[in-house]
Amino acid sequence: MSTITREALWTRLREASLVEGDPPTTADAPTPWFVRVMLGIAGWIGALFLVGFVSVGLAFARSSEAYFVMGALACAAASVMFHLRPKGDFVAQFGLAVSLAGQILIAVALFDWFGKGGGRSAFERVALALALEQAVLFALVPNFIHRVWTAWSGAYAATFAFKAGSLAVFMPAALSAACLAAWVFEFSYPRRNALLRAAGYGLALGALQSVLVPSARP
Image (cartoon, rainbow, N blue to C red; front, side):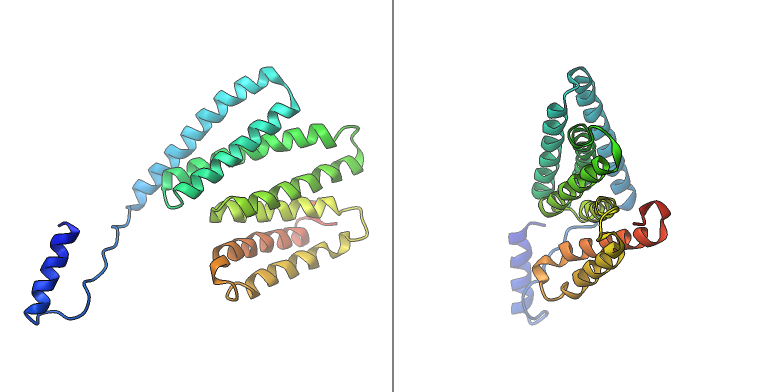
């Protein structure tokens, strides 16, 4: 039934005193769960084929700059997909897979740039660069699962970045405080509700990991 026909029918029913008020709003029928699962799997398969094709080309280049540029383009493409189709199951999973592949390419480039010479300081420089990268992606890519991932991985990288510094012992407390702040301000900024909730979940995982996982402790 078209919108015009539905409104006309409601008007006739209201004139006959059979109904009252405005016509009910129509809602889209929910997609069955098995269809959403299949769309998600199709998204990951499509992304893996795309990433494999790009990786074959990059294998011949063997350039840190090429890795970084392709990784940045992949993350930018994922951000555009999430902006255009925020509720599409296929697009959500496809964009997530593409973004993760882009983050791996960027991480490879950062290791080549900041990890030369090895040693503890080089590793910490790479970890700090990864933490900053994840913070940027957290702000720019509007997807809840993606933001939880970037918040957690950024917090994990920051823990390693400050592992040998004087602030290392304060990292679990700092992450816990940041997590608490995200949940406290959730209702103060309703327009940022989803962003703050994603930050809260990601920081909570980072804080727990910094305390419970031996390799993540300062």
